[in-house]
Length: 192
Image (cartoon, rainbow, N blue to C red; front, side, top):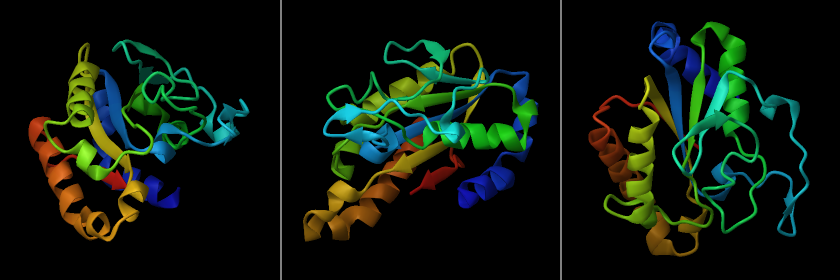
């Protein structure tokens, strides 16, 4: 968490200027750990939400039907709907940012992660990529600005040697395409 807080202080110091313009938006993408598997045992979520992931009236989530609503765990419940979702890193990240600077105003989280996915499924033109870009653009309606992408993915790419060896190039292309298609060439990306 310390590296995420350093990331915030390094890149989002100017976020206060955006508070009056709408939400400070973060995209959440990747596979199961981003979608949230905390507290899931034998395909059932225990319902426990740790204090750092507690709801906060200043944190919203973009639902699957593209509506902003109060953010509560599991954030990806209607995105990674074929699996049981639990607690992920999104709420803890947003709460940490607000603890550092409550003047930011509203944080908007855009869940896009789907468990068990390979980096090739996130390539430009694929369903997951298109959904990420569509949801990112929809998040801007009504004001706000995208301040970062939290990317937690890669375990599925360790199953075979070819995928593992290709991961660096594939992820770099993915990041370049996201930045290009969102017209955000300097979009910060936090990769776990």
